Image 1 (cartoon, rainbow, N blue to C red):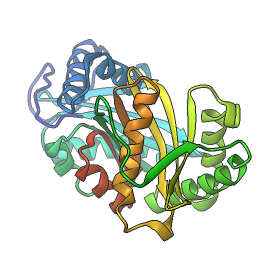
Image 2 (tube, rainbow, N blue to C red):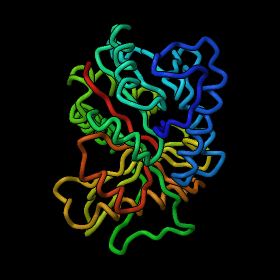
Image 3 (tube, rainbow, N blue to C red):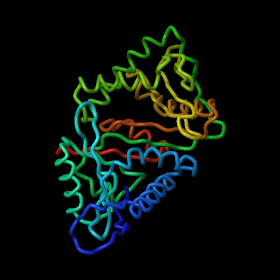
Image 4 (tube, rainbow, N blue to C red):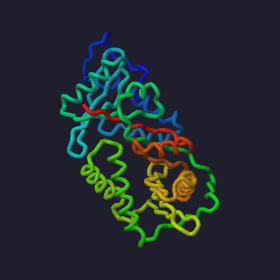
Length: 301
């Protein structure tokens, strides 16, 4: 999303009207999204792959203009609740955002969500009252990343997998609840669905690798990555240091393991998702050079 008011529509003044022909808006929207991903350091194939994800369901969006900019909104279902989404907002002033929120409420939405592309400070300020629910972050990895001294990495065994899986599910549910968007029951449902989608063959799911991180003769954490998640990108579903081993510098070491794993899978970039409320992880990603690709915020109506 971009908040510089650079979009243009026909007419003038502040009256907001829905437009039947979305061609002019769509061309500008796609260019703004691509520009945000390029600014975050994405090579062109990755920027365009991310754009395709951002355009999902676009034909069902409602687009409006006040003559100075654009508003694009939609509603979808999330765990049985109607969720409004502000997909684009370049129309200046508070009236445009209020119109978008009111439109979502009129469609039965209980909350409204927005996706901000890249480090868009102007848009972030405009949605300052919205809670940060999560971020996608990415960085290019070193050509030959080295594991930190004293840290060993091995593949998780198939016998270890069930215990690892149970711990990952519990941690994922806790992350979702902490982010504040879902109830514990809804979070458990989402967790079951997400794990079934990402790991349909469990330990043997193609493209996925599971690691144990060892230091001083004991397992201090685990890793789960998906190679080829997007063009040239390994997605780090989890690089966890166990709580009793935190505060010893292993967090940065785990990031190095992620880079190493990405190269093991033939990829040149590493991507993570971090939930809102996890300030420690956000701080670590910021300190280790992971740029924000998308930030997701929400507001209860």
